[in-house]
Image (cartoon, rainbow, N blue to C red; front, side):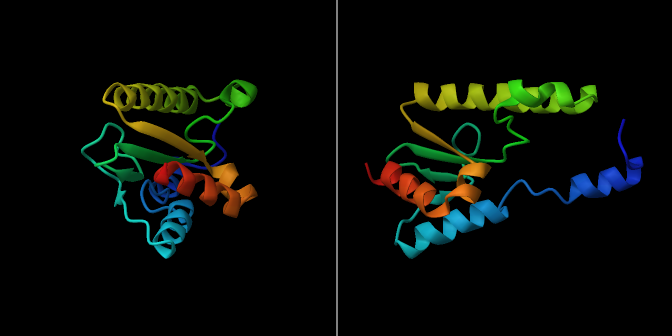
Length: 134
């Protein structure tokens, strides 16, 4: 059962951003400082990667732990509302499908999780840069 009424929940959910999140801005800024140029939210590739180098066929997704189901099997039982369970499971399935499509088309795909950036920002950014330049 939700702890807030429907209109409050609607306002909260409307404020959740899908593009240019604070985590994405951190990574975008770090890449620009290193003179690495990329496409943001590249719509021509399946899943609209957050960072894309179309000529090199490189895609990077910066995903929130909750919304994209990081270690979902461990905490899925805590979600009692079927709506949220279905939402996260659909996100996981969509992500798998998009990653598979990209790989079939010859793209290299990297997923960066929210907790990786929060826990060790510099190392995560270095991993992203390494992925982009190799």
